[in-house]
Amino acid sequence: MDPEGLARLLPPATLAALADSWLREDCPGLNYVALVSGTAPSQAVLWAKSPGVLAGRPFFDAIFAQVNCQVSWFLPEGSKLVPVAKVAEVRGPAHCLLLGERVALNTLARCSGVASMAAAAVETARGTGWAGHVAGTRKTTPGFRLVEKYGLLVGGAAAHRYDLGGLVMVKDNHVLAAGGVKKAVRAARRAADFALKVEVECSSLQEAVEAAEAGADLVLLDNFRPEVRPGRLSGEGPGRGLSRLPGSCPAGAAPHGRRAEGPVPQCECGGQRGRHAGQPPAVLWAPHRCHLSGDADAGGPGPRFLPQAVC
Image 1 (cartoon, helix red, strand yellow):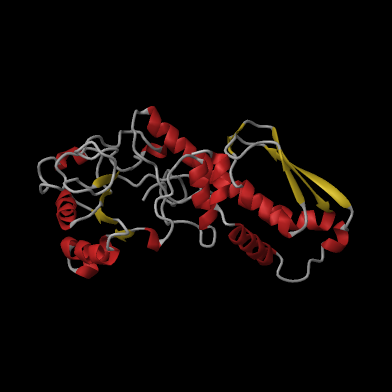
Image 2: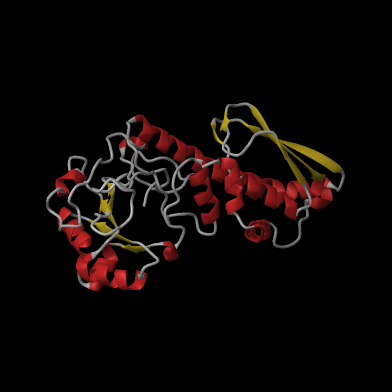
């Protein structure tokens, strides 16, 4: 997907509303320092001082548009940044430029950080010969999900579901509340009707087979040990369930010694992912949950990027 074309995914009204809310958060009342900076026409330059992937231009533009400033870009969205690089210039009244500066920089840095880590995870996975997907979670910063999901896309990862309405995902607590995997999947299947897929988080091979038998479209093998390969399900599932699972997530396919996870590229019949007649569900394997960053576990990265890489 062309990173430059991804901006079309962002509705202008949504961009403007987000930019307005961020600026209001930073300056909800009197801006005393505006009396210091004055109103003289001014210019600021944006420099990249660290390597990474440039992401978040639409948000940066929207913020400065709210304060009557104009942005000129020298690098396209998705560019690999090699420091020190001149990225953009911003022009406008001094007090307006300084009003938007910190909010715009925070947004661009956060989005670029997510894109950079996503790109690194995808590159590592591809380097092992693995053809699955690195996808995002809903474990995003409250109020900042659109930015972080967009950053995933710029980095070459998949956004997975954007919110609860994008996919019926049955997690362990749903299974407990429903009284078992089959009951939970059947209820989810009824709720999803024909328009949505059903994904089920399973903590054992037995649960995975039960989920497939009940009609799950996607099976998430959660927190499996590296030696437990999805291929072990071969022959254990029902006729149209998990009869063969071509491929699995390779070792070292994610940062920090964890595994990336993704749908098996093809189903048994050789078709693309999706639940057709006689077709098994796709499988997502999460031996240790692939972190893009943020969780406070030992050896994990800092909190400045998206909490987890997958599902």
